[in-house]
Image 1 (cartoon, one colour):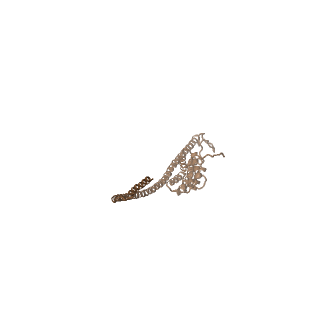
Image 2 (cartoon, one colour):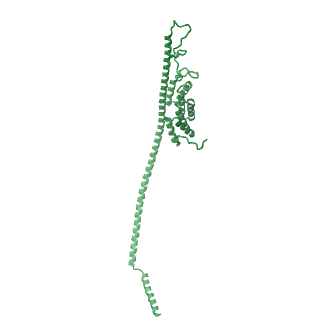
Length: 326
């Protein structure tokens, strides 16, 4: 029992001695070295922080400079793009007006050629009629003489000859409309149909729309039954279209379509009617008439222009079929 207590006392002494040694303060030299190292590390950290801040400030300054340069470049590009857009719009406007002028001039030249062809055909027919009359007169002169002709009797022309008119003048075609006469028997026209139409077409292609309107109206007044009457009516619609009077233009185009069913201006009148309807917001009617141009006049320039318009409108050339029969 005594031995056990001795052992416990010795163990307690050993533990106390060890704990005292552990808790005893370290030497002053060791503590000062650690403090110096810690101070050096803190100084290094502060220096590194200052270096990093300086680097970040330089980077921010460089980025700010680059950003400002970029903004200046973008602003300059915006100004340049604005100028380009204005230039493009001006060019497009000028090109559109020039294209319209050229189209009118080309249309005028085409109509002049067709007018010349019609006049040549009429002259050829008149020459044929005159030759027939002359042959008839020659046959009468050669088959009779004053000494043998019974009093008051008349000779008959040979079978192949055509009798002359009561005045002895050759017959004239109804299309030309000779000066001094009119289909309605009203006052005489101011000039021949050919000259009046040529003047009206020249003034139209030259942009003298008010004068051309009066001349085309006079043409329809005096030569309504001529071959070019439908052209005159069509150009009245063109004048209204160019001047922005779209309802009046539609009315003129309708007169071409209704009053002149054999006119070669039917396709153009129907196409321009559809364009005028679009101009006043009648999209459904315009689309329907564009499709009608494609259906009735396939392969023509008007049909191709109608198809282009339908593509611009985002619709097909063929109308949608009904889902249920009516």
